[in-house]
Amino acid sequence: MRIDIITVLPELLKSPLSYSIIKRARDKSLAEIVIHDLRRYGKGKYRQVDDYSFGGDAGMVLMIEPVCRLMEELKKERPYDEIIYTSPDGVPFNQKEANRISCLKNIIILCGHYKGVDQRIRDHLITKEISIGDYVLSGGELAAAVITDAVVRLLPGALNDETSALTDSFQDDLLAPPVYTRPSEFMGWKVPDVLLSGNPEKIRQWQEEKSLDRTERLRPDLLHNTDNG
Image (spheres, rainbow, N blue to C red):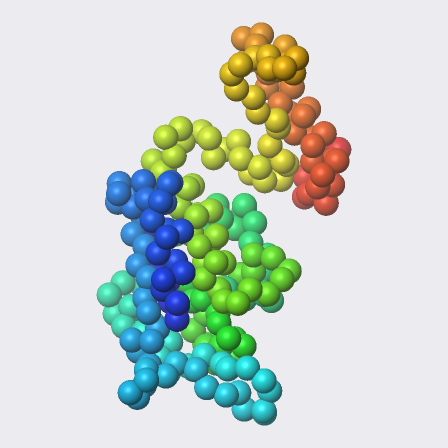
């Protein structure tokens, strides 16, 4: 999978995308992640990529020309399955969307910045707008990092245990059950006996019950998306 990220602040993305599971996936050539500095495609001596908005509203707006120029250059090299814009008013990002994107081959993520982007970019160049939450960030770089991390960890081979991702929270619209490790008792706090029983069926049933219970208590809204309850 190849992910091209367009940003005016490439430095913000270098560290989050250079460690842990993402680094492993990149080292294994499972994911190719390329960060593009939009300012390289700006105009004039100062590589301008933003300007004041028509209508006199406060805040700067990313211009269509440098964005279009960079995207056209990328499209000459390969076809893209999705061109994503990170925006507060995009569709909410969730595990199902991460699963969907992980099945694609090539995507572009355009990081929003300043007051936003020229609407013509959204109308004519973007195929999907995504929001990671109902709040506003200084820029879309952190959102792009979140999307990339959630997607790349799903690629076959990215995790040491490929079944691990299947038991993550939200994969079945439920929160994951509690997990424990050694020692089995600490300061009088014990691991549930069922997890030490060695009985796979009982353990599975316990996990399902705890998962449903945790979801009912902490995120009952998720149960509207399931047949449980």
